[in-house]
Image 1 (cartoon, protein in one colour):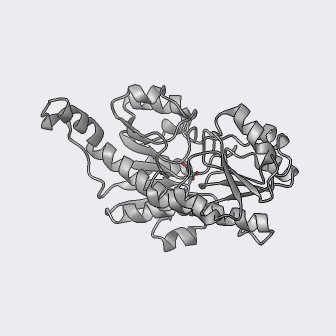
Image 2: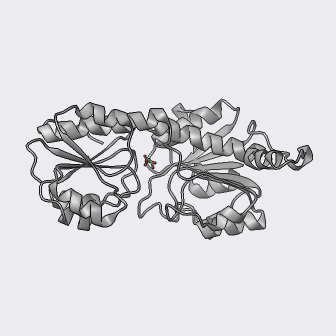
Image 3: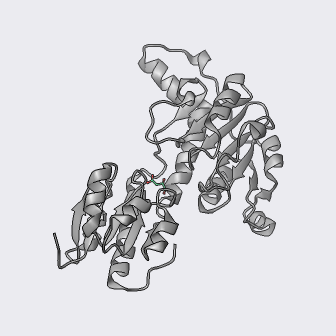
Length: 313
Ligand code: MLT
């Protein structure tokens, strides 16, 4: 089906504001990006493809396109888009690099507080008909050493928020200078030092071949006993089995986890452990972040389709 207007294919649920940006300059079509056959068929006529995190945009998808000019990721991470395959076909890849950074940082804080005060377990217990005050004693955040792994946009927002709790902040990030970190009131350290000093560790890294499995059995052997670990970045940055083992042994006191090696999933060794708080990849799931992600990428897609300059990710 040919169309005179460019066809924009939306492959996941995006904020309604996304479509409003397009007006009637384009024809918007929808497909379920997780239905592979439907995606491959629909992408044949598309000039632009919009996805969130569930659609795998790989070489097979690019091979099925005929006039695709731009792929847009309504979010930050590009790990579900095979960028070299896009480049090989001359397809532009855009994302919304600042759309959900506040939401992601706030979610990491929420996981940490839930963990420190055992809110999900206490909530379940009380709703279950028990009044067990003595079972749910927690720890304070004030006075703790917080280790931020990855001091990019989200890591910095997380650190700023934790500073307000009266913490000592240390961070590991090979791409940030000690001077920049010092400006933020954060001491830059090597990963090993962070692991041995931090009472609380939060991960804020993209998933790349370099960062995958960065924290595994060896690293978890060096942590301060009872450390609380938060991962609202990507599954697999911390080895899930190694983390489960460290939690079982009590070496890690608790973990707040929003992201998993395989997503979607309803089976992780972490789900069986009491000292764990989990959410199904909700870091970016706020109305504000989804609005921004949708409208930011829609604007970039329009620019790309018009042949205008597209702001760099
Ligand atoms: C991101 O990379 O921005 C998040 O994973 C977004 C999302 O959940 O869509």
